Length: 177
Image (tube, rainbow, N blue to C red; front, side, top):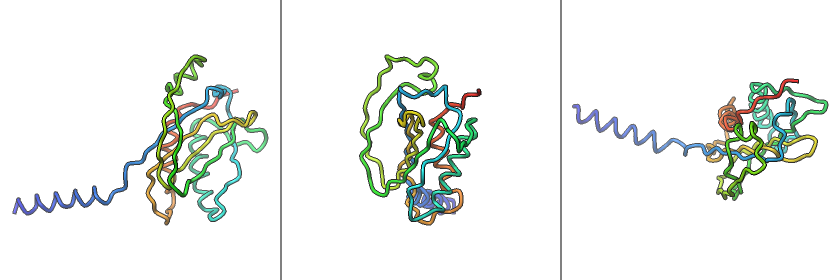
């Protein structure tokens, strides 16, 4: 009997592991041109998902929550940051960078900091979020998650955890003026 239970348990574990999606790959990079100490407000660029306003709403709500948790406020007039996001519908080759930890770099703002180029092969369904300096229109931070579940039936709060995983890479808080 114990042997039978052990075999059933082993088969159950194999089935669960075999059916679970690949682990989410999350990464980020940032620009040394960013004035991270000066940002306090944000707004969104126009949503590009013409086939689903619900998708736009879910992603924006998740991003808004993460930004506000970091002390940033939504501003319709002269925001410091503009936020763009996209879900890539096919595999993509992407160039990222290995850099000093962003929080450490912001403290020192080391002009001599180096970076190493890394080429990634990201899967279909990659969510990429870009923070753009509203004055210079330069992307100052980019976070992305690949290997998302390929579930086309997005349930409530589907993107909440994914967006949170991306923003875990952005530990900076808004400046208080």
